[in-house]
Length: 199
Image 1: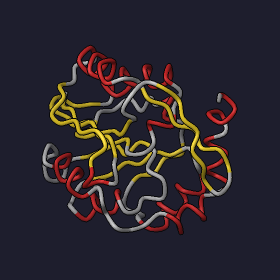
Image 2: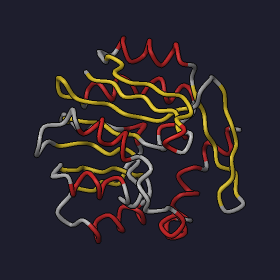
Image 3: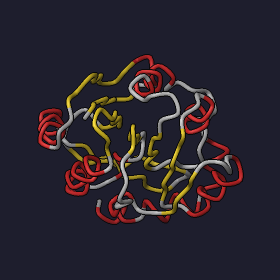
Protein backbone atom coordinates (compact mmCIF):
# COMPACT_ATOMS: atom_id res chain seq x y z
CA UNK A 1 0.00 0.00 0.00
CA UNK A 2 2.92 2.36 0.57
CA UNK A 3 3.46 2.65 -3.18
CA UNK A 4 -0.08 3.91 -3.68
CA UNK A 5 0.31 6.30 -0.75
CA UNK A 6 3.56 7.68 -2.11
CA UNK A 7 2.06 8.24 -5.57
CA UNK A 8 -0.85 10.45 -4.46
CA UNK A 9 0.85 13.77 -5.24
CA UNK A 10 1.96 12.60 -8.68
CA UNK A 11 -1.48 11.15 -9.46
CA UNK A 12 -3.33 14.38 -8.74
CA UNK A 13 -0.80 16.46 -10.65
CA UNK A 14 -0.99 14.25 -13.75
CA UNK A 15 -4.78 14.19 -13.62
CA UNK A 16 -5.37 17.79 -12.49
CA UNK A 17 -7.38 18.79 -15.55
CA UNK A 18 -9.31 15.51 -15.55
CA UNK A 19 -10.15 16.05 -11.88
CA UNK A 20 -11.29 19.59 -12.63
CA UNK A 21 -13.75 18.20 -15.17
CA UNK A 22 -14.80 15.22 -13.06
CA UNK A 23 -15.40 17.10 -9.81
CA UNK A 24 -19.01 18.12 -9.69
CA UNK A 25 -19.84 21.72 -8.80
CA UNK A 26 -22.91 20.67 -6.84
CA UNK A 27 -22.14 21.55 -3.23
CA UNK A 28 -23.26 18.50 -1.25
CA UNK A 29 -20.97 19.81 1.50
CA UNK A 30 -23.00 23.02 1.97
CA UNK A 31 -24.51 22.15 5.37
CA UNK A 32 -21.09 21.27 6.78
CA UNK A 33 -19.44 24.33 5.28
CA UNK A 34 -22.14 26.50 6.81
CA UNK A 35 -21.44 24.93 10.23
CA UNK A 36 -17.71 25.51 9.74
CA UNK A 37 -18.08 29.10 8.52
CA UNK A 38 -20.42 29.91 11.42
CA UNK A 39 -17.28 29.81 13.59
CA UNK A 40 -15.43 32.29 11.33
CA UNK A 41 -16.01 36.01 11.76
CA UNK A 42 -17.09 37.93 8.64
CA UNK A 43 -13.94 38.79 6.73
CA UNK A 44 -11.98 36.15 8.62
CA UNK A 45 -9.25 34.10 7.01
CA UNK A 46 -9.27 30.33 6.50
CA UNK A 47 -6.63 27.91 5.33
CA UNK A 48 -7.91 25.37 2.79
CA UNK A 49 -5.48 22.44 3.06
CA UNK A 50 -5.55 20.32 -0.07
CA UNK A 51 -7.69 22.89 -1.86
CA UNK A 52 -7.53 21.24 -5.27
CA UNK A 53 -8.68 23.57 -8.02
CA UNK A 54 -10.77 25.69 -5.65
CA UNK A 55 -14.23 24.58 -6.73
CA UNK A 56 -16.76 24.33 -5.35
CA UNK A 57 -15.54 24.64 -1.75
CA UNK A 58 -13.13 27.59 -1.86
CA UNK A 59 -15.50 29.43 -4.20
CA UNK A 60 -18.33 29.06 -1.67
CA UNK A 61 -16.13 30.45 1.11
CA UNK A 62 -14.93 33.36 -1.02
CA UNK A 63 -18.50 34.18 -2.05
CA UNK A 64 -19.40 34.22 1.66
CA UNK A 65 -16.90 37.03 2.22
CA UNK A 66 -14.19 34.86 3.75
CA UNK A 67 -10.54 35.39 2.87
CA UNK A 68 -9.08 32.11 1.63
CA UNK A 69 -5.50 30.89 1.59
CA UNK A 70 -5.31 27.60 -0.28
CA UNK A 71 -2.47 25.11 -0.36
CA UNK A 72 -2.16 22.04 -2.56
CA UNK A 73 0.68 19.82 -3.71
CA UNK A 74 -0.38 20.06 -7.37
CA UNK A 75 1.08 23.07 -9.22
CA UNK A 76 -1.49 22.57 -11.99
CA UNK A 77 -4.41 22.74 -9.58
CA UNK A 78 -2.97 25.81 -7.89
CA UNK A 79 -2.61 27.35 -11.35
CA UNK A 80 -6.35 26.85 -11.89
CA UNK A 81 -7.06 28.48 -8.50
CA UNK A 82 -4.91 31.50 -9.33
CA UNK A 83 -6.65 31.94 -12.68
CA UNK A 84 -10.14 31.70 -11.15
CA UNK A 85 -9.63 33.57 -7.91
CA UNK A 86 -6.70 35.96 -8.36
CA UNK A 87 -7.56 37.97 -5.25
CA UNK A 88 -7.02 34.96 -2.98
CA UNK A 89 -3.66 33.50 -1.97
CA UNK A 90 -2.67 30.12 -3.42
CA UNK A 91 0.39 28.12 -2.40
CA UNK A 92 2.03 24.99 -3.76
CA UNK A 93 3.06 22.75 -0.87
CA UNK A 94 2.83 19.41 0.85
CA UNK A 95 0.51 19.54 3.87
CA UNK A 96 2.88 17.21 5.73
CA UNK A 97 5.40 20.08 5.73
CA UNK A 98 2.91 22.83 6.55
CA UNK A 99 4.74 25.64 8.36
CA UNK A 100 3.39 29.05 7.36
CA UNK A 101 4.25 30.86 10.61
CA UNK A 102 0.80 32.44 10.80
CA UNK A 103 -2.59 31.58 12.24
CA UNK A 104 -6.05 31.34 10.73
CA UNK A 105 -9.67 31.60 11.84
CA UNK A 106 -10.49 28.27 10.25
CA UNK A 107 -8.65 25.22 8.91
CA UNK A 108 -10.28 22.98 6.33
CA UNK A 109 -8.96 19.64 5.05
CA UNK A 110 -11.90 18.24 3.11
CA UNK A 111 -11.21 15.00 1.20
CA UNK A 112 -7.46 15.62 1.40
CA UNK A 113 -6.21 14.70 4.87
CA UNK A 114 -7.46 11.12 4.46
CA UNK A 115 -4.91 10.50 1.69
CA UNK A 116 -2.10 10.62 4.28
CA UNK A 117 -0.60 7.54 5.90
CA UNK A 118 -1.68 7.00 9.53
CA UNK A 119 1.55 8.30 11.07
CA UNK A 120 1.46 11.36 8.81
CA UNK A 121 -2.11 12.01 9.96
CA UNK A 122 -1.02 11.85 13.60
CA UNK A 123 1.74 14.37 12.93
CA UNK A 124 -0.71 16.81 11.36
CA UNK A 125 -2.54 17.68 14.58
CA UNK A 126 0.29 19.77 16.10
CA UNK A 127 0.55 21.51 12.72
CA UNK A 128 -3.16 22.25 12.79
CA UNK A 129 -2.76 23.70 16.29
CA UNK A 130 0.17 25.92 15.27
CA UNK A 131 -1.93 27.44 12.48
CA UNK A 132 -5.14 27.99 14.48
CA UNK A 133 -6.19 31.19 16.19
CA UNK A 134 -8.04 30.87 19.51
CA UNK A 135 -11.59 29.85 18.66
CA UNK A 136 -10.63 28.69 15.17
CA UNK A 137 -12.62 25.90 13.54
CA UNK A 138 -10.99 22.77 12.16
CA UNK A 139 -12.95 20.55 9.79
CA UNK A 140 -11.72 17.41 8.06
CA UNK A 141 -13.01 14.16 6.62
CA UNK A 142 -11.83 10.68 7.63
CA UNK A 143 -12.79 7.04 7.47
CA UNK A 144 -14.96 5.35 10.08
CA UNK A 145 -12.36 2.96 11.50
CA UNK A 146 -8.61 2.42 11.58
CA UNK A 147 -7.16 1.03 8.39
CA UNK A 148 -5.92 1.63 4.87
CA UNK A 149 -7.97 1.31 1.69
CA UNK A 150 -7.19 1.49 -2.01
CA UNK A 151 -9.77 3.10 -4.23
CA UNK A 152 -9.41 3.99 -7.88
CA UNK A 153 -9.23 7.16 -9.95
CA UNK A 154 -9.01 6.96 -13.73
CA UNK A 155 -7.86 3.36 -13.48
CA UNK A 156 -5.06 4.09 -11.01
CA UNK A 157 -4.87 3.11 -7.33
CA UNK A 158 -5.99 5.89 -4.97
CA UNK A 159 -4.83 5.55 -1.35
CA UNK A 160 -6.92 6.39 1.72
CA UNK A 161 -6.24 5.83 5.41
CA UNK A 162 -8.00 6.47 8.70
CA UNK A 163 -7.38 6.27 12.41
CA UNK A 164 -10.16 5.12 14.70
CA UNK A 165 -12.66 7.48 16.28
CA UNK A 166 -11.14 7.34 19.75
CA UNK A 167 -7.68 8.24 18.48
CA UNK A 168 -8.95 11.21 16.51
CA UNK A 169 -10.71 12.43 19.64
CA UNK A 170 -7.50 12.03 21.66
CA UNK A 171 -5.38 13.83 19.07
CA UNK A 172 -7.82 16.71 18.88
CA UNK A 173 -8.02 17.06 22.66
CA UNK A 174 -4.27 16.77 23.13
CA UNK A 175 -3.75 19.62 20.67
CA UNK A 176 -6.31 21.94 22.20
CA UNK A 177 -9.35 21.22 20.04
CA UNK A 178 -12.88 20.44 21.22
CA UNK A 179 -15.15 18.33 19.01
CA UNK A 180 -18.27 20.31 18.09
CA UNK A 181 -19.81 17.86 15.66
CA UNK A 182 -18.93 14.45 14.25
CA UNK A 183 -21.03 12.32 11.91
CA UNK A 184 -20.08 9.02 10.35
CA UNK A 185 -21.28 8.24 6.84
CA UNK A 186 -23.51 11.31 6.69
CA UNK A 187 -26.34 10.36 4.30
CA UNK A 188 -26.93 14.03 3.50
CA UNK A 189 -23.31 14.52 2.43
CA UNK A 190 -22.44 11.63 0.16
CA UNK A 191 -21.68 9.30 3.09
CA UNK A 192 -18.75 11.46 4.23
CA UNK A 193 -17.45 11.03 7.76
CA UNK A 194 -16.87 14.53 9.05
CA UNK A 195 -15.16 16.11 12.06
CA UNK A 196 -15.76 19.71 13.14
CA UNK A 197 -13.76 20.98 16.12
CA UNK A 198 -12.79 24.33 17.60
CA UNK A 199 -9.62 25.44 19.37
